Image 1 (cartoon, rainbow, N blue to C red):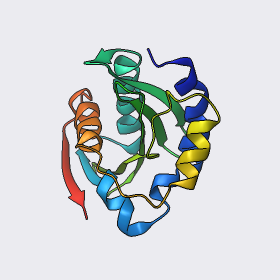
Image 2: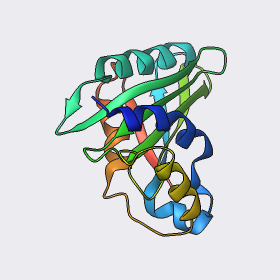
Image 3: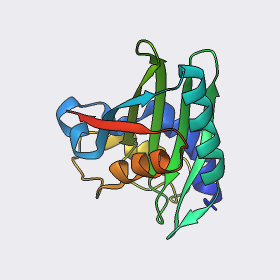
Amino acid sequence: MSCLFASCQAPIQATIRPAVWLPGIRNLHSRVEKWTVKQASPQEAYDDAVHALQKLEDKEFNGKMIVLAKTDRTRLFVQCHCFSRAQWLDVVEITFRDGGPGITLARAYSFSSGLLPLSIPPPIALLLNVVFFFVPFWDNGFNKTWLEMIRRNMDLEIISEEIV
């Protein structure tokens, strides 16, 4: 379970996302993938992603956890907050759209939201993450891992390719 400090700061940090303000630096701690889902409508793919995230929600994986944050059925958009053991916040956003007959395309974007973990008492973590938005850091491969974990827990077959 995420700590109280992280839980109350996560929605704000996920919205302001200071770690992705600078294009060159954000590439160190973000990942964008194009997902191709065959034999499914965008609505079916969206429903499958929401179901997969509900299965993963609040389960711990070596101290890491995923929390379903937002779903928008009309926009076919889902967002989740992914916490590391130290309560660093990574955000995953997936948007589904029609890709032609029997094909759904999705843009899956995972990014680290700030330099410092949200286990630091509020509003200190938020303020320091804004102040240090320009400091480069590496995500230790977590953003790729979050996307893989979500894909593996979906029932539909997904072909993934990284967008650079």
